[in-house]
Amino acid sequence: MRRSSRLALCVATTACAAVLAASCSSGGEPSPTATGSPGTSSAAAAKITVPGDTWETVNPAAVGLDPAKLEAIAKTAEQGKSTCLLVSRNGQIAGEWYFRGSTPTTPAAVYSVTKSLTSTLVGIAQDDGDLRLDDSAATWIPQWKGTPAEAVTVRDLVSNDSGRQWSIKIDYEDLIQAEDKTAFAVALPQDRKPGEVWAYNNSAVQTLEEVLRGATGEEVIDFARERVFEPLGMNDSSMTTDATGNTLTFMGLQSTCRDIARLGYLMLAHGDWNGEQIVSRDWVDAAVGDSSTKMNAAYGYLWWLNREGVLAQPLAASDISAAADTTTKRGRLVPDAPADTFWAIGLGNQILQMDPGSGTVVVRLGTPEARPVPPTFGAEEASRVLTEALVD
Image (cartoon, rainbow, N blue to C red; front, side, top):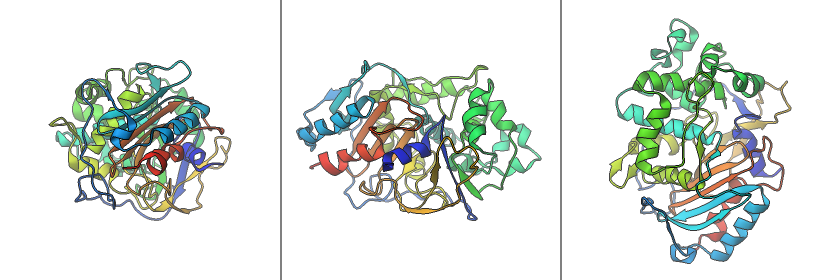
């Protein structure tokens, strides 16, 4: 199985997951880094220009990208069941391709890319003083008060080391079928102490809906529209709700290649959008600058990282009997890509890739296969923009 397919298994929202059990606790909040780019990199920090109200298109060569290499990567994307591929640098579109009837304004489900948006909403709420990472989530989830779950902090939820009950069946059958997904997630028991186990836990991330709603006093769907979509010009994006009206925070975002690229630029620009600080620089540096837990070097605050260290191992959707994979593997998600590359990734290889060193954003959306079968197009293929097409 290709590395990109293994990665897709790890981050899918409705059919597969990753778990790593370990006897180490989560680290503290990563400290902001000194250069002009999130994380640490040997590359010079790129000066980030975000897109304007209307996207501009530029010849790839004018922004240091090889047109022929981009065309070859786009061909791979088309063969890999993609619906769109967008490559951008300096706030301009250097290459854009649409397949299978998709258009620049056709919204599609981006699955767990939603989690990275949720991370940004948590950061905004912290900037507003509505919550703090080290607050007990029970502050806004009264059912957890006086129970072992009271030890779970907001930081634990965005780091995925909360110790909330997890299994493939719970996350990928029961949660999906629940009409009130927030109530279902909140009612699950506390299996382990926070910081004892890392799990790609959809149910735990859905409890952030109650945290955000209680902390901000707004429905999360409205908070996202007012604080992210409208300021960034993400005009074709919307969060969705469950049958009872709860905003989905672990999946459910509907968006386009162009809109998702704007979210990527927000992160590259340290939260600054044409002079308006949408989310603080400190939050961006903490969310994508370093691993949030020693149990998975590839994870920040609901963003995927390319850091060296222990990686969580994917479990196949059919392995329902395997509640956890305690084997360990060391390395980086995409060894050929720069160490400070980071991603938002959803089921079926919905990809948002940012490279701080070059100021490059790549978005790929495609067929939502639960277990992507080659040919496909994942993070490894997206990184070819950096390793093959980037010439300046």
